Length: 196
Ligand code: ADP
Image (spheres, rainbow, N blue to C red):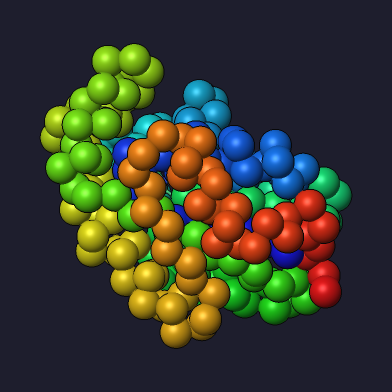
């Protein structure tokens, strides 16, 4: 079974993903991490990726889906995985549906982390001081928020209609949020399988 974690920048997706994959024993597939690794190469594609990340825009759907499809072909993904950062828009959601269909995989849970906007902004300001991510500048953060609202938030309806969405308030301590996530997915974690 595949789990998708959705949430705006600053919602704690990265932190909660790390806890979840440790608890569930499944691989963590973070498109942000994959792209941050890919941008380090000395190729035209890497420069294009860096430009998109640093301006807060999404990289192309075809590039993302190629990276994700390659990664999901890894044997470690056979027992399931956690997708963090994808899908990011309805086109990617449809492309993933299609990929899962071709492989006979089941999209188990989609967990959406809910955080009030004012809280997000203060978290990102803090993160900028600590982590120094190149895309945590004020202009890029506000572009990423805008893109989340316009392109990613519609996925909440998409997955509600599919019947897979679980919304989790992501305020409070990381431990509290983690417990809410486990409760939302029914804790049936450890025995997740892609194929059912
Ligand atoms: P955050 O959720 O805090 O914005 P991520 O690490 O998930 O951070 O993503 C960082 C950047 O990587 C995004 O702003 C975007 O440029 C790019 N990116 C990540 N995932 C995708 C995706 N699925 N489609 C397109 N671009 C993506």
